[in-house]
Length: 323
Image (cartoon, rainbow, N blue to C red; front, side, top):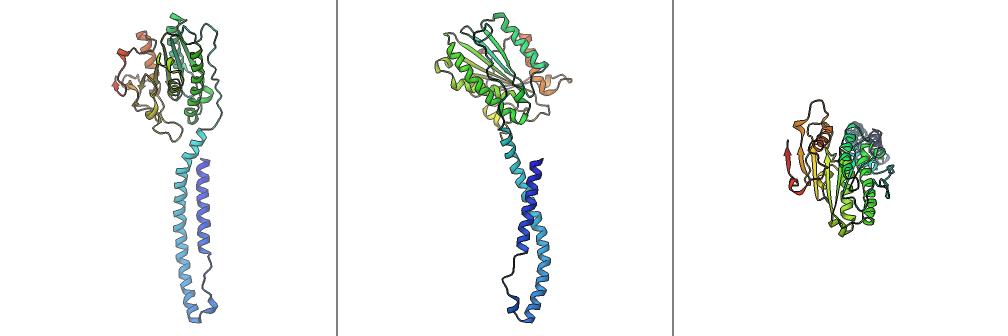
């Protein structure tokens, strides 16, 4: 609001200053060099011109006010975009503890990384983590599940998309080095889950691993992306960012979608994902934006799945399934 007020005030100042200069501009005609009758005629004409000028001043003022408002409409999004891209990262990207029995090693086959939504973990994300962790405990040495706590950087929704991408890029570089040091002849499966605005972090991690992993390791690494009602607008100006980017770099990407909630930029299917619309199954007491996460957790619990989709059960990328 301060930015808008400042832009409009600047417009008023510009308009009034400009018009004042126009009206106070001295005439190039010298009165003393003109006969009396001509001076009278000029005087009468000046009175008429002053009236017109005052009227023109009003028109010019209104015109410049609209220019100022238009400038504010253009300038404010640019300023908001700049704001979204500033600020230091507070989340620690050292989320792996090498050398412990519960972390990634040569025997680790399945890796699941989860990014919560704006503000941090809640009962629904905790339930998802509990379900996935219970699957990992069946073969502790071969499965790894981690929820990344980036709550300090996800609270500001305007900055969260940018910060989430930066955080995940750094985590991806850490994972690249760990996987290289713990290279195995076996194939590995990496599943990254993004909830709401956590989709930016999840997608960034997938793309970082896809581009940064050693080519030989990448050939033996399956990358899966799951997005749960993903927020798709990046910062202020990236209105179509999600549809243009989410899913690229993965071997398979899926989206669980709810379409009747008021959360902006979350209600459209993504072209690089196999989309499942669960809107019609939502109980009335559950908020729409929470429903894809709740539904997905229930699905994992019911089917006993660890989240990885075998090739024969993967829907076609770009498809939309209505439940």
